[in-house]
Length: 369
Ligand SMILES: NC(=O)c1ccc[n+]([C@@H]2O[C@H](COP(=O)([O-])OP(=O)(O)OC[C@H]3O[C@@H](n4cnc5c(N)ncnc54)[C@H](O)[C@@H]3O)[C@@H](O)[C@H]2O)c1
Ligand SMILES: O=C(O)C(=O)C[C@@H](O)[C@H](O)[C@H](O)COP(=O)(O)O
Ligand SMILES: [Zn+2]
Image 1 (tube, rainbow, N blue to C red):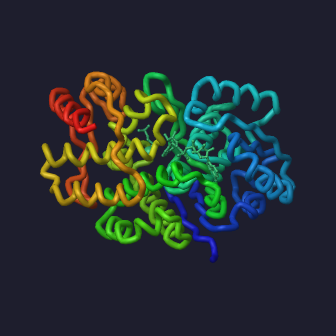
Image 2 (cartoon, rainbow, N blue to C red):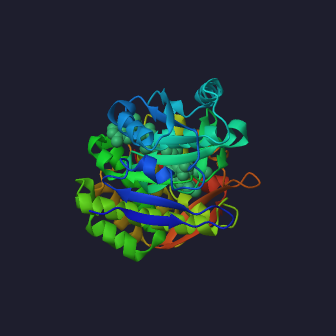
């Protein structure tokens, strides 16, 4: 099957390609020789993690070397805890030790953790060197590799330090998904479901019809789900690169509660996508209570998440603790927490919600566990 190409065209940014296909990793080096920001790079640093590197680092390096790049590598421990200031600092020191210059580039070979960390360290080292995303998890292919959010977590909350830095190229090799563990497959499905609810009836009902095929990793359905998600995200980011025009916030559906779950349960306890799915269930119920969201939407979304292998979590925390973490969410203005609420499939609203209303719904959420 030929590769699919989506062009991400953001005002005031260099347009970049997202290539999705079974064999695109083999062609990484040759492709980078055709990209303005990397064509003359004297050296490429590949950042990967301890799960992905043994599987795919050699293939990536071979492709880069065949295109006459000098290649270095840094391998970080796999898992969400690695997305930290401490690991970022080790990477900056290693970049300096490798004598990387502004003309060099970083390739992020891994899931969203590696992608966010590579994007963040590259965008800050020497005030910014080029980053290329080579996503290997389903989540990274459908969401984190596109759009330019980079960052690390603090103990106070998710992604509290970061930048908006677009990659020069996104190389999504679907072949590597064969080794992705089932927890991580469901995780990626969480972000696909999020995009479908926010995007349109067309995406949502297509996904609902194909949910069991996606959950069982049907190749064609997976490739289409990735392409649909990337097209949707590219369009949103093109309208609102820095989440300052009231558009990009839609990509945060499910994340107000989801990020609090990740942070309070301990980073890595639940996958990002599982936490987002929990947040979508909560936000849809909140929408039904305060914004007229139909109960049919709540049920249809529940069914979709169930079918995608994302059951409601059995975990909960004290409402006051959850609210305290939510208060550090990036959508907070003047101390008021905002939720992305689905008014209907394909229609959403960013709604300020008073603390007492949030606490009441968090208490009901905790009782339901
Ligand atoms: N920047 C953004 O726009 C954005 C969007 C969504 C999520 N995120 C962030 O992404 C992170 C989650 O990403 P993730 O779910 O990819 O997590 P991850 O990077 O931790 O990857 C999940 C697990 O799968 C392993 N893995 C990845 N690819 C593999 C493969 N092909 N074969 C075998 N194992 C593989 C990893 O080693 C890891 O153990 C979170 O930190 C989240 O906040 C960022
Ligand atoms: O790209 C975006 O914008 C998103 O919000 C995508 C989210 O799926 C992603 O998890 C993002 O990292 C969350 O951003 P944050 O600004 O809430 O930390
Ligand atoms: Zn997310």
